Length: 334
Ligand code: NAD
Ligand code: ISE
Image (tube, rainbow, N blue to C red; front, side, top):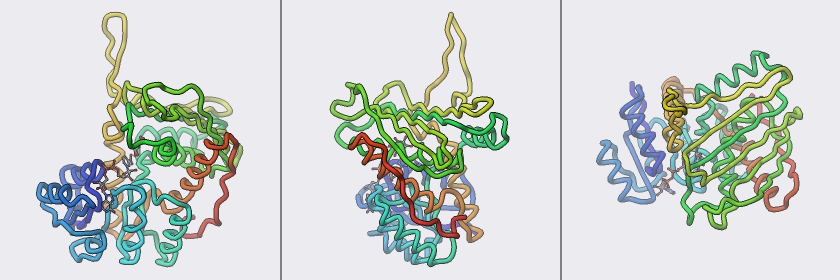
């Protein structure tokens, strides 16, 4: 039987996930929606044939909802995650899991008390074919032990009135923190954040920044976050190992050579660059939920990333290296 999904938050990514569940993926349909902006929920509900609920509590408890997808703003995630856990329903929550370590720990405690994993977080890069190939290359031993990982995360532009210095870490760099942990299979032990000459396009925004992380095994990770780079959405990653290097290839499918030059397309934004990764992650959630299980990035990953993100924000303010101290990992996540 098809999985009935209720979506909380029908903004940009909420609508994109509803589109893929409805038009691209199999095994599920969106039966319910809600949004703090009622008009937006009504519009999406009418277009997609989903019932509109007044709030997340009534959507979560509905018999017409088997699984919950949370695509509201980060600070609102906790208020939907905890009730969904209490209802025992599988939850797909967009990143970040929550916006404080305390809230992440509350979620972990609730999931541990439930005795099984119910939460998958939308850190979709793990489902991207290029990152998967990079990880397989490292794991194969082809480049020897990984010593450094260099990541670049470039957005074409961000809304000047909404996007803040802290968001470059808490909203954007979190993906690179996730990837570093995923590729190297280690936690981050400390982080430093450096900002130099500003991109004048962003006004007072501290942009670009460079995060420098030390992993628990000693490998070093650098992350450039640029959010007003103009030319497109450019995601890069290169691992330097003991005997070789491996890097993400360009993401476009063709390189055109003409005249005396060559060119390819740079994706416009995350929707374009990671379209297949989002399809794969949501299909994985659907397939698992129909079997009564949940996989993918876990609440532990969400917590660990929050610890590094908080440390990064402190590091950016102080100019110092900030250690990333974590609680003991519950066995549920091993
Ligand atoms: P958005 O502003 O376009 O949409 C968010 C929606 O949530 C809005 O319609 C807003 O009215 C609604 N909302 C806010 N509080 C709510 C509440 N308490 N209950 C119900 N609805 C509420 O933002 P977006 O770009 O779609 O981002 C949403 C989430 O997805 C964020 O957590 C963001 O970090 C994440 N995101 C992830 C990726 C990714 O690459 N994985 C990309 C973009 C956004
Ligand atoms: C956004 O929320 C995302 O998650 C995108 O993947 C990221 O590139 C962007 O910077 C964030 O704002």
